Length: 128
Image (cartoon, rainbow, N blue to C red; front, side, top):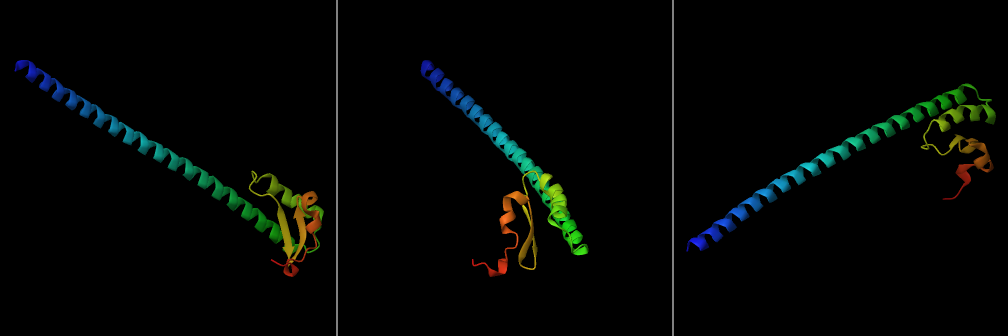
């Protein structure tokens, strides 16, 4: 019977040690997952902040363009390009083109070469 008791005690010790190891591994896994989730949240917050900042600065620049146009009704495509170029080049690929519409007609575009054919297009007369 003593041999049987040793086997049973060995099995119980093994089960307890395995359970302790499994529990410890689970706790460490959970901690790692939570750490990864927090790291991802932090990275997403930084990305969101950068996007919001970039978009806000473009809106400010576009509002400056709007003010400029309102003050000088005779501005031409070259003046428009000089102003729009700064917004376009600093946009980090957020802004693909800038179109200026007077009433319902497109009067200026940037970059000009890519979209010059839409200048004069009256959007009110277009069908959906």
